[in-house]
Image 1 (cartoon, rainbow, N blue to C red):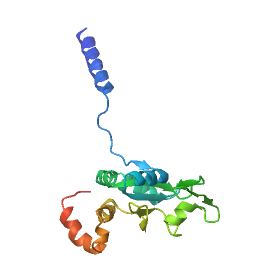
Image 2: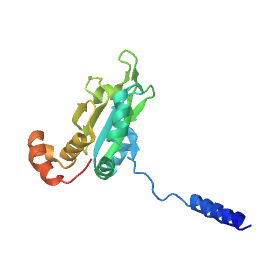
Image 3: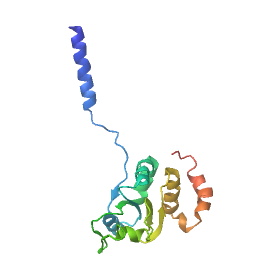
Image 4: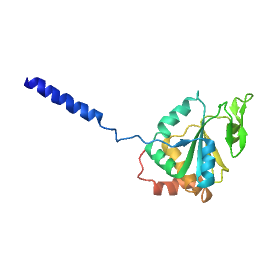
Length: 182
């Protein structure tokens, strides 16, 4: 009888423990549409990052997991940028600021992606727009978390207006973020 009572107590404790709400939610990037980023920029100016990808792109998936999944990256992006994920091969019309972008069958890409990538259809490509939604720079290729952090802090902190990127990496970045672990 004691064994049965002990087993019941154990099961009740296990049930109550497992029924508790999960308070440890995983950090995630607040991805929004291109139109939503444009709308938010009109009300609260902020730079925008656009992750231009395709469903078949392996490096896009790796960057999603390793770079965009890094907590340091997530925190910085959510605080300093509007962040957009744009499928370059989307067949849906994309409207931004009253302009409609359609799928271009000849290039197998949406016109929005073609314009943002300046015709260089390479995936993944990270596109940076200023707070007025003007192009800063597209950066093609996979970026590791630390390299990506250097770039987003360089642009996010307006350091791109003050010094060359190589100088920023060697001096400013090393000084400010020397204790950061990836």
